[in-house]
Image (cartoon, rainbow, N blue to C red):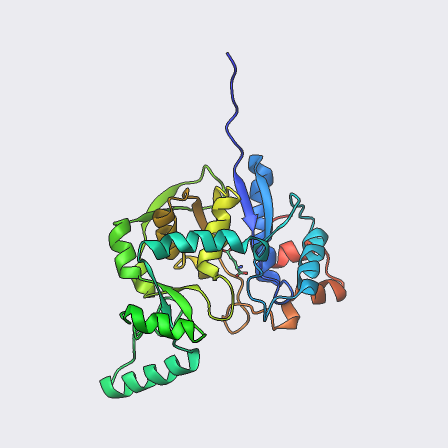
Length: 299
Ligand code: GLU
């Protein structure tokens, strides 16, 4: 009898090349790498470079150099999201054909003013999404087809939003699988997905050819990622990713959202703070082991 061994777990680290990696990225990359090594899994690197205004090749080169310095090796070739936009568009078209997306002509400035006016009129704060941004008030949700055709025909800039309420109805109630630790065998539970908390999220940006939510969901599926291990700041976004997986009939990875590294004021680290960048720490004499120690990982 031929015995087939189970396929290895597939992990990925997926940074955006819009700045230098910091200690928070080191934690995420190392948890992925340590776990992949411990369970005989694969480790992939994906460069999330869909934002042409902020992503730069020199940051991608720096990411690879910093990860190699930390002792993390990745399978080659490395996937760049910007090289797979056609795939994002084909999937988007499937949602479009099903009436699950609509074009939105509102600029960020217009939305800011409109929400301020709504708050003034209503006397209370407009609802926020889990990231703290104002929920989309729906101005473009019900434009008629003629107006849409005219405005797009005239070249008016627009994004495409997901009709989250309708999409949730189509998909029905959803959960995602969350592990307590990054290890595939660790205890896991079903977490209720709450996509409605986000409102009508953008799937194709007006200033970029895809969006974080669409790209991350599609590329995790394309790369056959089985275990998404990332920070707790992205846990809420998983509800949207789970909804897109259900709509597009993509496989469902399991998730582990790890702790974040915070600065002295308790804020999430940012790429703009040089003091926690891996390059700066390396230049000031830190070793990869010092980095592990500083972020609470054993040697
Ligand atoms: N590209 C995202 C970031 O740099 C991470 C995406 C993910 O892990 O899902 O924050």
